[in-house]
Amino acid sequence: MKNNKILFKIKTLEKMIIRTLFNDKCMFEQKTKSIPTPTQMQIIEYILEHRDEDVYQKDLEEVLKLRRATVSGVLQTMEKNNLIVRVINSDDSRTKKIILNENAKKTFLENEKKMENLEKIIISDISEEELDIFSNVIEKMKKNISKMNIN
Image: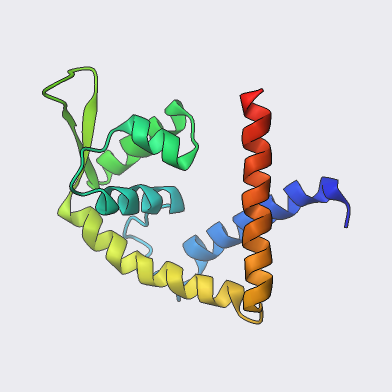
């Protein structure tokens, strides 16, 4: 396998997953209902996991490794779709806390199962050992990129 093909393969896999999530009728019954993107699902999950803490845009930028403008756009869409509310921080008026609406929690729980089912399909016929190797390789790639961005 040529190393210069890895980026293409990763991007192709990502596109296939996204298409399956948004186009497969068995994954999402209602096409009219707003379906959260994988990034929105990650944001909802992060906020749920940190429900006892204040969550800000900066936190999401760091955790998701996304740029400020990207996270801002995703949050605007989530606000428009009634998944979150941004509230001005009483300690610092320049920052806004991100708070989930009940709608977001319900949407997350509904779609979490669907994403888990897709993951089961994706990893079928792949051994635990192969999955461990794959995970380790992905983590090493992430470290390599991080090193490159530090220098």
